[in-house]
Image (cartoon, rainbow, N blue to C red; front, side, top):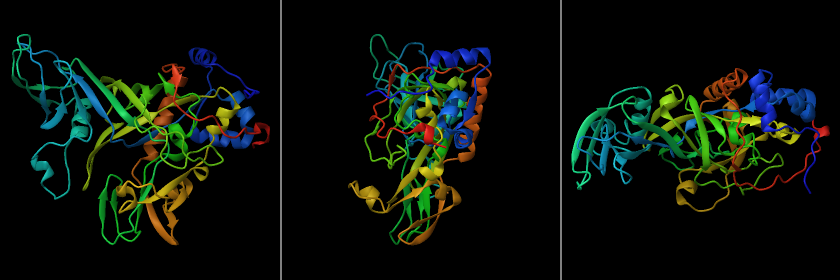
Length: 403
């Protein structure tokens, strides 16, 4: 039976308010206080849009470039950008460079054993910054594409297209990493000291986009988003999208769950929100800033957008054995983001210092910028062509009783 709501808004009604300068926009942090003070029905009546944000390492990222035809024309197959290999199995001068791609025998990666200084993420950041990049390419030569090699300088202004297309971004919840072994280990979650000596995590918690719409009622294909300092879109569900996981009574998944595939024009982005990172013993990654506006269509969405760090729990895994084994194992514990944010968690009776790999400061900044764009009429809300795969909400909330 379809749930009936006391508040019912449409995307067009909200967009009309944006055009008239009458829209009420708050960040996810601000929505928590509004719902606590007024309840979800009144909050849904008053608030039109809730903005979210996250800024963290998102390895499954990369960029499509069209570098323009050469004279004579060439079909590029083996391609390097500043020595970093790019994929050229596309049309003549289209290429894709992955964020974690590493150059072979690069002296910058030999300064410290196990430390990688430069890779695809750095090329992407430098392109966005307007810096020159050396393109080196080779082809097999054909009648219509006779040229066999080229070496030239390109930048964001000389390439025809520069499109950030990230297969998997913005995980809906994620692991907390610890190390139970007797040796220090080096992971994409950072350096983990032996004998449960530290913990790392990566999420904006109560500001995180997909945790504020846990069943993807407003987020889907075609959703307009803040991406890397510019405007982007959700292209599809991301790789490893797995919405059918165990959830708590708040509807929040208790493991890595939903993901999104994102796309946007790099020529409108900023290195304030796209940054390369070198991770000791792992390689390189790309920090990506993402903000998603959530239209408050009804009181259920108001309820979900008021989720607090104390209501979001992440699983703790041993990255010395359980994670690399690939086996399905139970987490060592579940810990709230409220505790993680305080800087300490308890696992197996031991108090462990916890540190983030993502930036809550930048996530808050993104949510605020997106709020200002909407208030100023620069950014309208887009109705998804199709929402992302997700289970139905499990529990009908008695909204009038929520205070």
